[in-house]
Amino acid sequence: MYNILIKPLFDFLAALTGLLLLSPIFLVVTIALYFANNGKPFFFQKRPGKNERIFSIIKFKSMNDKKDEHGNLLPDVKRLTAVGKFVRKTSLDEIPQLINVLKGDMSLIGPRPLRTYYLPLYNDVQKKRHNVKPGITGWAQVNGRNAISWTHKFKYDVWYVENLSFMLDLKIFFLTIKKVFVREGISKEGEVTTVPFDGNN
Image (cartoon, rainbow, N blue to C red):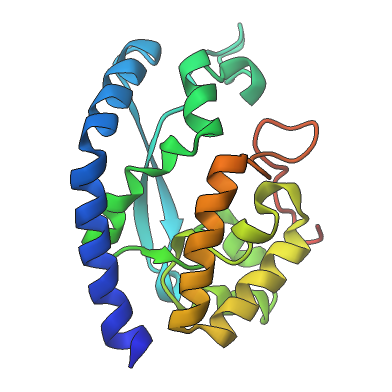
């Protein structure tokens, strides 16, 4: 009952309220990134959702598109703008995903939607993370975010799917607020974001 009726309704109302309350911040960040990223404040990328259905995730664009002399994108650390660094540290880059929640692509809470090219790398247990809608935050995020290994992330994701409940979502919601203020686990040590998943790590 909770996952089928109550959670989707709560997601919609919470996302709508969140967008209205955060609209001033949304506007300021959009303008700042518009100038920092040559007119491109938003980042769109295909991600797998529930039952591996592909959708376009929306985030604030924290890195520019600068390339080397061969036309290849520079490393993340060299493309992260000053504004983008602030947006990432404060988790403001996640705000546009409330639009994904309104559209029904995502939930406020669930396993984070990852890159589409990871799909063939999952084992049968790890694939269970797609049995529910992906979330803006999740059990793995409040237990280490990008600072933990992929193996641990997937274990947390699957555990969440198998134990999904209102009380668990409520716990994750408040722990997320704490993580945002403490700014823990934003990146893996020595990396701007996190290391890619190769099926083993």
